[in-house]
Amino acid sequence: MSTPSLLNIPYRVKGGVSSGLLYSQIPETGAGDFTVTRATTPTADLSTRINSQGFIEVVPNHVARLDYPLGGAVNGCPALLVEPSAVNSALQSAAWNVSPWAATSGSQGATVSGNVTTSPDGTTNADKLVEAAVPGIHICQQTITLTNGTTYTASFFVKASERTLGRFRMTGTTAYWDLEFNLASGTITSSGGAINPFIQNYGNGWYRIGGAFTANQASNVFNVFLRDASGNVNYAGDGTSGFFVYGAQVEVGSVATSYIPTTTQAITRAADTIVNTTATALIGQSEGTIYWDIAAVGGVITGSGNPQFGVRNSAFTNWIGLTSSLSPNVFRITANATTGSLINYITNITSGKAALAWSSAGLALYVNGSLVATSATNPNFSFSRVDIIGNMTFKANAFALYPTRIPNTAGAGVLSLATLTAP
Image (cartoon, rainbow, N blue to C red; front, side, top):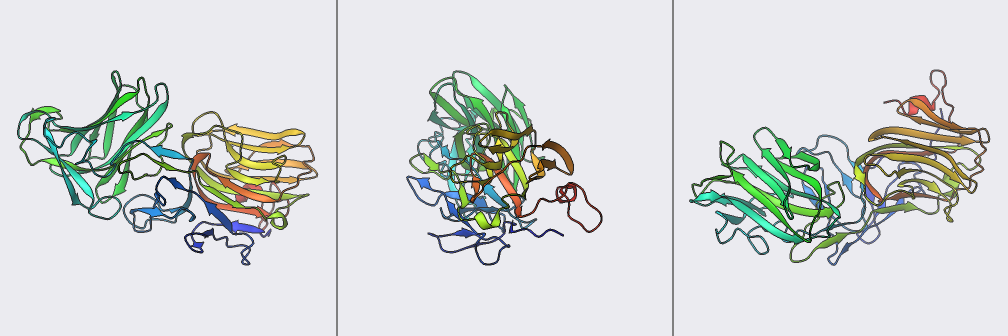
């Protein structure tokens, strides 16, 4: 059976904060380890992941983000979270009881009590939106300056208390959408044309709710409404009932990325860049195989052109990789040489396994157990590095290189592309 020259099943990092490495199981010498770079500005170390306890955790800038499944407790193995650069334009993301949030005076029929319960990050820093004891609309809101014509995703975290019903609305010249949420059932109902509306269960009663929109003016408003048991937004409050809120985020693009904490200014998280630039001896040159087990998350952020996950030479004239295409939720698996594209397979691979093998006889691509593309051209590749680049949001469960061309199919006990990529 073929043995990989490089195998990375993301589960461990090593090294310090300033020199963190993503550990590869093969080879054990460290030659297969990856260097991680990422930054946040103007404040360092504000990139986040879901840790093994199920909480949102800030990760140092040079450490790979091993992201566990949602659910509030250990319920699976981590995956390598890779994301593009993003800016959270919502200020005071976790402190809804201060400016620029507008509910503190009660003029909107609500107040906010600060730091009253455990948030999704495991500390007591979540606030409570409380309806005022007056008839009216009970709301908390923030005005955010955005770029007209640009698509954004807005999101926040919410947990039931006395109230289980609410409304999330983004407005410009008119309402972009309303997301009516039910925290008892963990569901949302969208109206008004939200792009990719979602509700995600973060465990411990917390949900993340959001959707995308295209801004139609510079001044936009992030609105969260309480609703009574009958679903009304205009009702007589009792002065004590409400729900818990946390983690407001507004970012460019049609997908919600990992939470970026803010206080008095917008925070930028740089793209993940995870590379091994001295991998020549680990990559098959005249023949070889590259394997991915990967899942796309949301849509394209920066478009196509660079492999998000692949091998290449330093000049970028030869490369094989998974890249983003020009449609949401699409990976483009491409093999390029100086003579041009040899395989350019575009499909809606939102998750699954893929392997691309090459030799003097040409190339073969398998996805989820099936042969999907071939090329009879001798690729004549030359590779020196492995790149994992955050040009779109995705999670990697495993990545491997083989120095030989694995056969398409084979008998019992022999590894093949079909069995390697079988669902």
